[in-house]
Image (cartoon, rainbow, N blue to C red; front, side, top):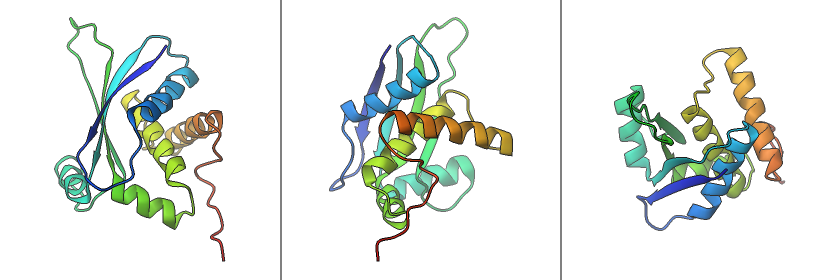
Length: 157
C-alpha cells in the first residue's frame, strides 16, 4: 500500500515539505486505517492570500486558515483511487508552530494527517467525531515519532 502525492508549491521562499515526506505521512494515515489499496491526493501549499480566498469561497470565512480539504467524488462508473485535494497555508503553519512551541515538521505532519482524514470522510462537527478524529491523528503522529499534537508544550523561558 502506498500513497501518491501530487505536490504543488504555489508559494516562494518558504520552508515546505517535499513530496517524499508528504507521501510518507499520507501512507501512514492509510496504514493506520488499514486501507490496503494505493491512493492518490494533491497537496497544494499556498500563501495567505490564496488560503484566504479559498476559505472565503468555500467556508465564508474572511481569513487564511491552516488547512482545507476538498474530497474527490468520482462518478459511480469511475473506479479511481483519487482522494482529493489538501490545501495548506505555509505562513499559517509557521506561525502556529511557533505559537504552539512545536517544530514546523511536526505541525506539517499534523496538518497533512488532518487534511487526509477529512478526505477519507472523517470530520469534527460533533464532540464524538472530534474525539475519533483527534485519536486517529494522535496515532498517526505517534507512529511517525511525534508527541500528541493537542498537548501544548510550555514555551521555553
